[in-house]
Structure formats: C-alpha cells, structure tokens
Length: 185
Image (spheres, rainbow, N blue to C red):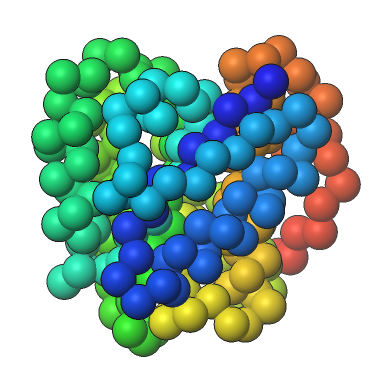
C-alpha cells in the first residue's frame, strides 16, 4: 500500500486548497492511502509513516515559510537519517505571478534533499505554457483549471513513483501510461 503524506503550511488558505488537489491526484493511483496534515498539527511520526511526501508552503520572500522551516529544524532534526530514500516533491503559492513560487519550491526541495529525500520535478504540461518543473505553483488561490491540474499531476506523479520504486509496481511508471503531454513552447 502506497502511503502519501501531504504536509503544508497555509496562511491564507491557498496552499491548503492546493494540498487538497495534490491529495486528489495521489488518490487516483490504486492502493494509495493519503494523509493531509497542516504543519501546525503534523508530527515526526507522520513523516516516518509515509513513503512519499508532498510539501507545500506559502512563498515567504522567495523561500519556504518559517513554520515549515521550523518543523524540519526542530521536529524532524532527530529523525534525520530515518527518512533517507523516501520520495518527495514541493508546491507553493504566492501573491502573484513572479512572486517567487519556483524559488520557494527549490528551497523546500533543498531542505528535503538534506534529509535524504529523493526529489523530483514534472515535465508534463497541465495547460498551454503551464508546467511544474520545480513543483506545482499558484498565484493566490488555485482557481484556474491549469493550476488545479498541475496540483493533481504532482500528487499523481508522487504516488506513481512510490508505487514503482518502493512497492515494485512497474505498471504505474509514468512512461508506461498514456498521458497527454504537450510539447514545450
């Protein structure tokens, strides 16, 4: 059974909505259990439980939020070696396009890599000119269908990778499935 944790911080509710959409995508893969936890309610046991982790944070001056950073600095510090080799990805929202969401995703991925997580980006397009190389991003609330679909794709891809790499289910490999892919440009 795939075990996916969606861990998020949300000040305005925008990242919380993205977390729900990421969870929808993860649940689309069979035999997948999904937990959604706010960083204020999450425990180290939640992270230790999961096979795959999607971390979401509001963009805070181009990086992850202080609450999310504190969770990894304090709550997870003594579990540093225990999560090595798990699979993870990132998502973020900012006040507008150009607000640094990709940088915030990169800062999340950097923290996760320091803990030994295998991190990934996605080359699939969720709409014209809309991809999630560093993770799913939104300007404010994820209202547009392309933004919502990017969140779903991220969750689905996380569940696919854990199914393939940790549970020996090669039929879930993304390249073995017919998915709509748009060419760059």
